[in-house]
Image 1 (tube, rainbow over the protein chains, first blue to last red):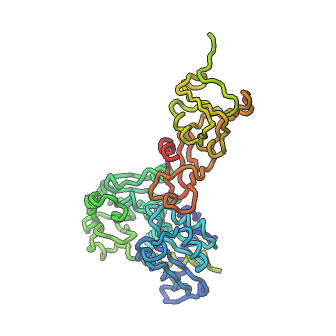
Image 2 (cartoon, chains in turn purple, cyan):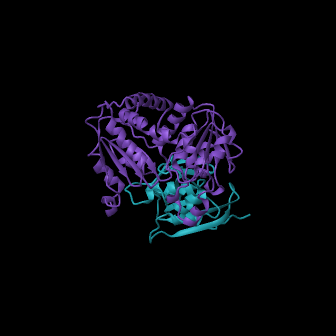
Length: 305
Length: 151
């Protein structure tokens, strides 16, 4: 049961919780496909507190709440809000919890969502905390694999890109512990998975680490591509050196096996060529669209009657 | 052979013994020492238990729980003797708490606990030997050297 619970980390959810979210998302997908608005949240308010830029995550939470018949309030740009006057996150949360029934937060510092959940009596959903976690993106990712390939088990998942700062990767790997999967982690040497994440996973997941995609692409079922996180680099020269260090083009797509898929949490910069978009392997836009049923499912299960 | 004491006895106060050799000054650094606290320090003293050890004797000072918790992180093998009128009235080994609250700064500058929020840092003990703790907020792990630098 998710009722009145915060979702800070993907580890907060049991296997049953995840499966129940997927079943509920299937139900929500039915409403969306039939353009049917449901009014199960018509007296509820969702607050979004985004201290970092976001397009998809914020809009998909807002769209999900609107489709459920609820209302949304949002903090204006954090640069113009009271946070710029030095207000602590704890104080902001104590105020916003009295204005809303559920709070979605994105923050540049790791642990911000956990802190928010300690100061709020209303459920908090973590929409990304620094290079920490992004659990709702993980649910969207797992749901996409399940919808597109039928099952998550017995798949080879190759994750390529910025494994050091990419929070979607950290959350996804934590969630994949529960499944029988083979993981290939491909990245430039200095964007490898941080030790503190790797140590947690090494005995629980079948992981291969490499810089060479070529070797693993033909056995891959899911190619999960991430962008290099420009905003997390303090040294911009370092970023310039790494940008464009790998790119998925039609040449790579040709080497992939039948029924394999390419995913990306978006936004992309240049790591996937636009020519790949029209191939049947490109599922990243569909993946983004699954953000709505997943977030509708979560909101309704957490604050629904 | 005649036995002699390298560090003289104290009348009232605390003896911190079996500190790993070389860590005495780190232990002293985290204690609140006042004007009436005379201190004797033995560094690299031969011990029966371990080859060498450090010892600290503090006059007129009895340690608080938070200080004992800090010592347990720097010197997990340390023993504490409480002395009253030259007699040991209590002796115990420091006990590492399961959770470490408010005594350690997270090494991750991007952790929410380092940003002026009204919250105490909090770590779980992942392993006692070797000592590894994990921030409950940002999930970053810290080893013994990092703990000593951030206590």
